[in-house]
Amino acid sequence: MAGAVVGGFLFHLLGSVGITGFNIWSMIVAVVGSMVILVVSHAIRRSAI
Image (cartoon, rainbow, N blue to C red; front, side, top):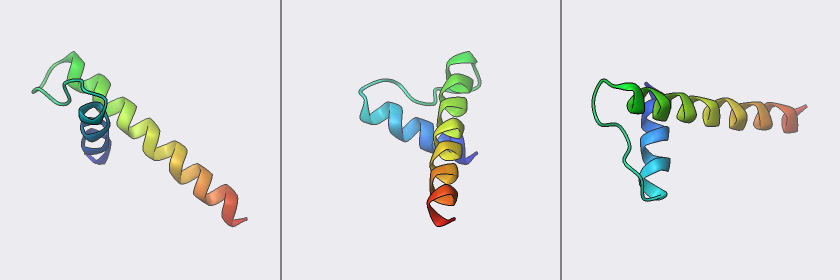
């Protein structure tokens, strides 16, 4: 769910449509948002070590 929120926010900032319901596009937006969350959390953990 957090990925969908982050993905929707990022796609909205880029001028594209975010979450539009239960369809393939919304799934892609949610996956991209989840990947962004994972990359950021990994970067934070790497810098803390």
